[in-house]
Amino acid sequence: MATKTEKRWQLDYEIEQHTEGRITASRLRKDRLKNQLFPFHRIGRSVYYDITEINAVIEGSRFGGDFDSTKRKAA
Image (cartoon, rainbow, N blue to C red; front, side, top):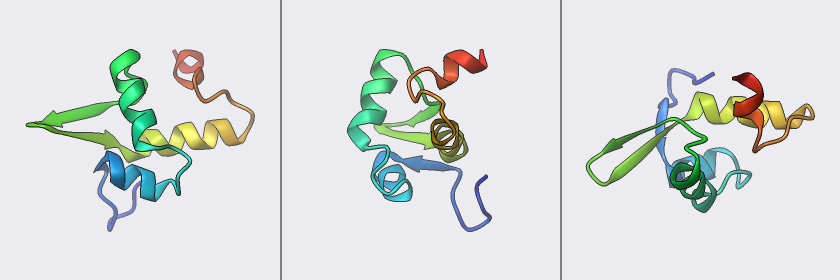
């Protein structure tokens, strides 16, 4: 869950820093273009990702969930 000092919607390089390299900016762009794994907002040329969703995916994979199929299992 995002804290009060943490923005909920972050740019790709901010996500990469927040996740300590576990999810790279190139991975976010690849997933966005292929199957839109992560929810995002496009504002002009900038794309913002939902950090709470990213954290949920990381937690799911930490407990044996497959990173690529986390969204499919939830659906």
